[in-house]
Length: 307
Length: 330
Image (cartoon, rainbow over all chains, first blue to last red; front, top):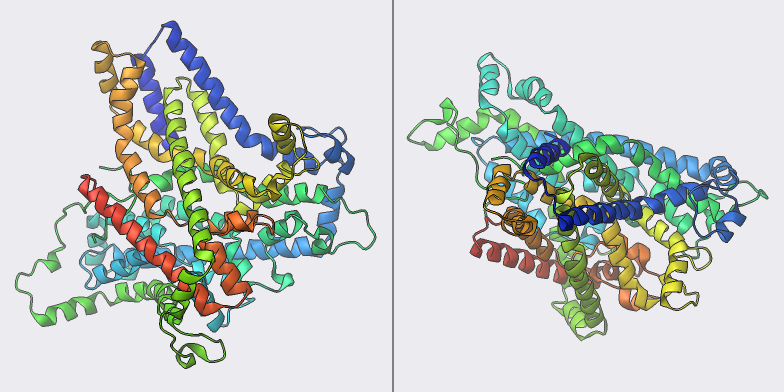
C-alpha cells in the first residue's frame, strides 16, 4: 500500500466532493501551488547548481554566481578525480562496506525479529525490554568507542558495520510486521514437519519480501551516508570512505589537493573537484531514489496505518 | 513500560487464539523448560542479535562506570582508581556546562519553533492541492534531501555560502546591506544556518506521517460539512486538523524526548575554530574532550549527565502523553 496511492485516492475522491468556485478559493489554490512549487525549487536548485558547476571551468564558477548550465562543458574536475587513487579506493571501500554491511544488518534484524514476534516464546518479554531500553538510554559515544577499541576493531572495516549492526527501531517494526502474518500458515507447515528454521526460511521470508527490500534500502543508505563511524574509528587514510573524502575536499581550509594526492603537476581544479565529488557521492543515492521513495514511504507506514 | 507501544506500532497486540500447544491450563514448573526446549531453534535465531545488543549496547553501559574513575587505557577498567564524583564536580564547577546548556537549549528551542511546525504546514498545503500531478511531483522532489548525508549537506552549505562565489552568500549580502561576509565563519550565523539546513533536509520527509494521517480521513466528512455549509477554512479547522492531531502529539512527544539530541554529524561538520563558542553542544563537546584530548573519564561523565537528562525527558513526555489520553510511546 504505497503512500502515493493512498494520497491519490483521497485527492480523486475529494475532487468530486469539493468543487469550489468562489474567487478567494481559486486564488488560494493558485497561491498554494505557487508556494509549493517554489518550495520544490528551493529543494532541488542547489543540487542542480552543483551538477552544473561540476562541469564548469574554474573561471566560470568564480565569475557566475548561479547557473544551471555551464557556458562551456569542461571535464577537468572529473578527469582529476578519476585519475586519483584516493577516489577510486574510497569508492570501492564504500561500495564493499555498504554491500557487506547491509547483508549482515538485514540478516541479523530478520533473525532476531522472528523469535521476538512469537508470543509463546518464554523469555521473549525480557529480550524485547532489553531492546526497548536501548532506545531510552545508551552508553554514549566514549564507552562505545572504548568497546570498539577493546575489540581491536580500530582501522578495521568491521568498525563501520558491527557497531550499527541492528537498528532497534527497525527491529521492532519488523517484529510487529511478523506478528501480523497469519499464524495458520506457519502452523500448517509445522504440522507437516517443518522445523522452526524451515518455517522461517520457506514461509516467513517469502512473505516478507517487501519488508526486506524496504529495510535493505534503509540500512544501505545509512551506511553509505555514515560519517561518524569513520570519524571515530578510522585513522588510516587508505581506508577512507567516500563521505570522508567529500569532507576532506570541501571542508573550510581543506587541503584538497593533498587529499586527492593525484597527478603530480597536473592542473588542479580547486573548486571544480568540490562540485564533482558531491555529485559523485550523491549519484548512487539519486539513482536508487525512485525505489527509495516507494519503499521508504511504505517502511515508515508499516505498523502506523493499520487498524 | 509497555513494550509494544513504539512509534509506528499500534497500541496493544491484537487478541488471537494462542496456539494449541499453549492452551494447557495448569502450568507445571517443568513445562516452561519443555516449551523452551521445543523452541530451541528460535533461541538459536535470537542469539546473534542478542549478542549484538549485549556487546555494542550493554557493554558500553557497563563502561559508563569509568565516569566515576580516573580511567587510563593501560590500567584498564578494573585497574583504574575510583574517584567518586570528581568528574561531575569538575563539570558543574567548570566554565563549559553553562555554554553547552545554552547552546543545546537554544538549538532545541529553534528546532521546536521552526523545524517542528514546518512539515505540518507543508502537509496541510499539499492536502489542499487538487491536481494530483502537482502534488506528487512536489512530494517526490521535497523528499530527496532526506536521503543525502550530512556531509553532502554541509558541503553544499559551504559552497552556497562561500564568500568568493556562493550564490546564497551574495543574496544575503544584498539583503543585509551589501558587504561581503563569510557567513560560515560568523558566530551569529551559526544557528540560522543549522536551522536552514534542518528545514531543507527534513521538512519534506516530515510531511509523510501527516499525509498518511490525512489519507485516512473519510471523505464523507467533508461532504457532510459542505452540505452543512462549511467553507474551506471551516473544513480545515474542524476536519483536517483534528485528523492529524494525534500525529502531531506523537511527533511532539518524540521531539521533546530527544530535545538534547542535537545531531552530532550536522553540528560537527558546521563547527569551525571561529564559531566554537556557539557551536559546542554536549555531543560535539564529548567528542573533542574525549576523543581528541583523551579525557575519557571526564567526557564519559558529561555523556552520562546528558543521557540521564534524556531519560528524564523521555519518561516525562511519555508520562504527559498518557495523562493526555494518548497511548504513550514506550
